[in-house]
Length: 407
Ligand code: DCP
Ligand code: CA
Image 1 (tube, rainbow, N blue to C red):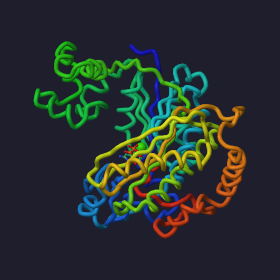
Image 2: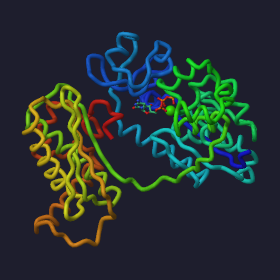
Image 3: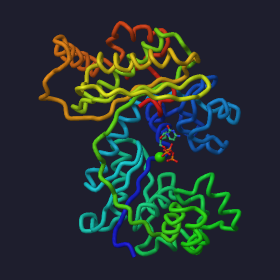
Image 4: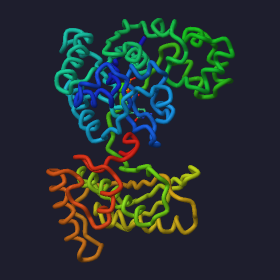
């Protein structure tokens, strides 16, 4: 029996809920964040009212529109979601230092022994939910169990605005009657195979001998066997330092126009570089990603002799790779992205780049200060100016397509 207590907490219909804070007229209606009908985005978040029509995350907007034309479609703004996410995570960190954020709106907390602070873990969970509601304005669902996987199943089951506590030692019993697709790790591939074997509930899955699970599904089958039996010893891993930073976007129309491609690359590079400076980091490896009209996706990378956080160096390195890629491929480009990795703390290094480099660094920081005050689009570099005509501007920058993918 597990002697740990794990909380899984997950915000309900996250992107839509943030939009509803700004515009309460969206309450109670089918709402989709991800793009406007006619656009080429995918659904990032569908409100529960929209889910009733079969809409779900990852579905092309065009299909969502056919299924539910009365839904309200919103492009979304990643800036607002990451702001809400940061507030949410900060509240969680007040409750336990043992926190593992998963993506943008969920986290695991190891709260073993925390009864002594809050009376019971149940009371602690209620207090967390109340603070999230009061300070961020959002509803969270919580699962409490002896391990991560059961805590997650419990929070999913409790949605929306729920709280499910699995009694100590009761993890396997709790899972047993549930349908197999409630178990994380059982997706569209595994579920039909198991159903073909007559396995419908997690309890039936748990009863299959470990050996036969291993035969059918390999090492992954062994894990499913343990999980189905409510056994999950995975630790709550504290968040590591960011290992890479990237931004990408899909064009509304495929393009081979070098000027447009470079303008967008410049914009994305500036966002990446600003984020680096924000974290007081520098990077040595610069990569670009290009997806062509036929969805073939390539990536090119270059490692510099010295790490950098300069707009111009990150952009120019990416642009050189873009030029090379475009000479070998004649198709138009659908998506472009740039990223940096191989990160190191900034500061204290000798500058090997040319003499004007230090002044450029000072300029980047001055631009950062203005942008923090007046918004990203307040200052244009020569190249990005062109984007003004192509993309709607918001307080946080240009509104890119598929905001969820444009981090
Ligand atoms: N997201 C996305 N693209 C996906 C899935 C999710 O951009 N394919 C974004 C939008 C979601 C957010 O991440 O609002 C959180 O994802 P969840 O899976 O937790 O889903 P929701 O919070 O939207 O709904 P739920 O109430 O089911 O948790
Ligand atoms: Ca969620």
